[in-house]
Image (cartoon, rainbow, N blue to C red; front, top):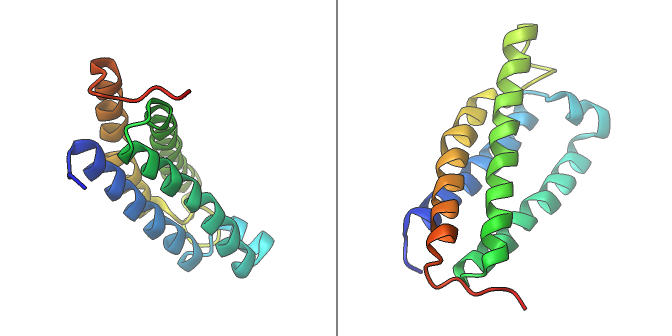
Length: 131
């Protein structure tokens, strides 16, 4: 696997995504209290498996995967922004909006990922259209 900018930022975003889930669990994110820690990890494992599959198809140079990768980057960016806004507005981190620290990482990796995926789509650098 060649580590280009798309692969680098995608892998980094996946890393921050995992860290984000653990930060939410550690900081008693509100959802953890609602559904329980076990179910929280089950749901997040499922949600994490989706971008893993997308990354596989990005490595295969599938055009649709690039579009879905941009959507993943956007969702993670908004997730990071949301955690930080709620923390700032409410002044509460523990028991409410935990996830702000890794949320900064989600923002700082999600935005460049969107940029580089979009740049490759526009350049059509050997992307395979889906049938």
